[in-house]
Structures are given as C-alpha cells and as structure tokens.
Length: 187
Image (tube, rainbow, N blue to C red):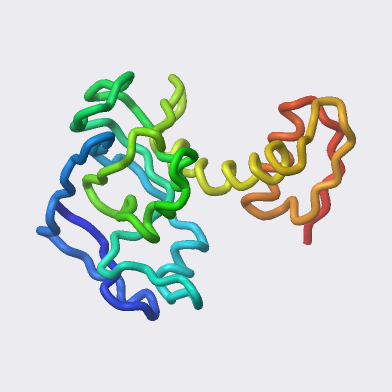
C-alpha cells in the first residue's frame, strides 16, 4: 500500500513516501479501514520532530485524524460491517494506555489502517470523509475540555479564550449547540 512513514525524528524531510509499505494485519477486536481522508494536526508535527519524554516506535505512519470505510473485520468485532463509513477516535476511550493513533500506533497517512473497533465512530449521512477527518482531534479536545472536564451545561454563560483557533472555534460551536451564551476572545 502507499503510505507516508516517519523513520527518524526531525524535519518534514524525514517523512518518506512508500509505494509498497506492508498492509496492516487485522487483529482480534480490530477492523482495517480503507482511508478516505486524513488531516494533519500540530500533534503530527510534534511526532515528526520528536517529543521529550515520549518514545515513539519508529517507523510509524503518522496522522491522528482518520476517516474511511471498513474494509475488513477481525474476530470478536460486533456491530460493524464491511463498507461502514467511520471516523477514528485517535485516543481509545476503553484502553487509553495504548496511546494515540499516528504516535504509538500507525495512523492515517496510508491507504489502509488497522484500528481497534472501540475507537470507531459512525459517520452520519451528509457528512463527507473530509469533514469527518477534520473532527476527532479538535472536537475531541473541545469536548473533553468543555463537557467532560468543565461539566458545561446548556444555558450557562461561557467565556472561551483562544476562540479563533481550531480547538477554540470547536469550543464555541459546541457551547452554542448546547444553548450556552458564548463570549469568545481571540487574537
């Protein structure tokens, strides 16, 4: 399969395009996704450059945000079918110790990607693969900050600092969708 792979930390020149990178194996509890879209985040830059204290297993296929369709289903996976349109939560809510896709596990800059089924989210009708691939990191971070950790409730008045960035704009949209009064600040 074609893939963009990081073999050594450093600048973007250390990312290598492969025409014949090995296809992933579909393990128990996993699916293989035919990647339709991926987006790059600043975390992908951190992974490429190397982060102090985090030992990334090299080589690694980068790319945290992934959307596509299920191409293969492994043993023990229920509730999903070949052809289902999915996006991937880069941090598994069931086993977060496994780490992030594109950092500790091969990510989305490849034609195929093996993913634990617990990371899958169904893409709703009317949402393109490109739109779905732009969601996981920015909206996942916003959701954790605002709802999981911040316990935001509808009807509250919310101040969002950094509202002009990716995560900040997601915070604004989530708060508005929940019926909050939003005061947004950005530079």
